[in-house]
Amino acid sequence: MNKQRTLIFIKPDGVQRGLIGKIVSRFEQVGLKIVGLKFIFASKEKIIAHYPETEAWFRKVGQRTLTNYAKKGLDAKKIFKIDDPVEIGKIIKGWLINYLQESPIFLMVLEGYDCVETVRKLCGETIPALALAGTIRGDFSHDSIDLANEQNRPLRNVIHASETPEEAKKEINLWFSQNELFDYERADERFMYGKKIS
Ligand code: ATP
Ligand code: MG
Image (cartoon, rainbow, N blue to C red; front, side, top):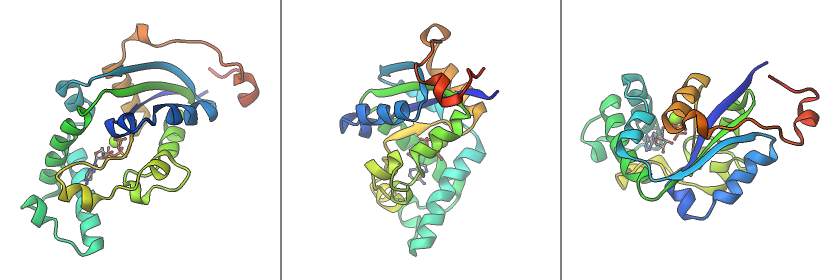
């Protein structure tokens, strides 16, 4: 059975706004198990390694800006001087390093059946203005791409969550060592799943 682990961290806006407790309870109440947690200042090297250094990732991030600007009839060139999505993605990655070093970040490894998808659902859309009410980003933020880009910063969207099971494995290995991850039983597990899952 597909018992999975995934990684989240509460970004500096969430930490500095005092949202750690509220966010942790959302994962606990849905029945996900906390198997690791830590509160640290992230190094520049770790942040660079965390977000993929691939053309595909830069393109995705840059394209998000271009799509949003086109939708609003705005010109991304005014901010970035270029309109190549890959180059825009690289600039945004640079902004992410500053953002994620504003304060400590709060990391957790969560475990549960198909939990990568469940956790992404609980976090909501990347762009807070589009994140549905009821999700963490939808309930605690309303930032938008054009405001963020005009201020030369990334979207302040409270939380990070791994996007795929492969990314989750990579990110868990990056931020946690084996002896920081724990196996134990939650009291409600047998009632949530009917039977113990493996
Ligand atoms: P995360 O990886 O942080 O969980 P995500 O998977 O929803 O977010 P990604 O495409 O991986 O989104 O982007 C990583 C982060 O970079 C976003 O959460 C956001 O803070 C920032 N970001 C992404 N695209 C843009 C953009 N076009 N303009 C400003 N910030 C952006
Ligand atoms: Mg991502």
